[in-house]
Length: 151
Image 1 (tube, rainbow, N blue to C red):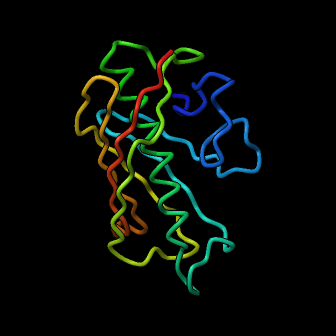
Image 2: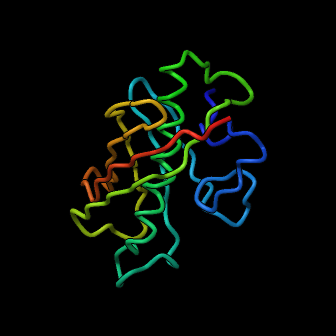
Image 3: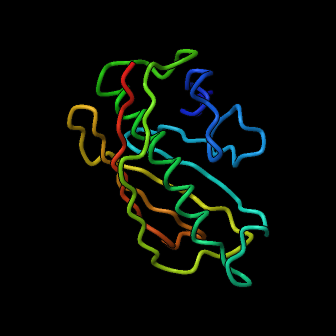
């Protein structure tokens, strides 16, 4: 079984609130590379309510942020010929810019599916386009400019 990208981060860089395996109080978001796309699934608790029945937009941005940086790391590894089948990858990315467009209310109590596609890589800059859906309805789209950390 494939490991999530976040579980391949070096131990000293795996503390992110949104996706760090070493942050037990965080969201623990997990991103997988499937073909040429990435996917994450997350079902938010009721504490992430904006107005009754809908998810708080800050959580949506957080999920897109963490999915985007993990996707960027995965796409960078593929581009550099680095296997994602090892215990640890030497690539970690941080957010340079994140744009989120809210398309529809995100319903509470539903599994959210976040998908990512590589737009382009230019040196250490990796741009990923994303969608966040619930029940096959796109609730938000996003684009992240992720920056590959120097070793």
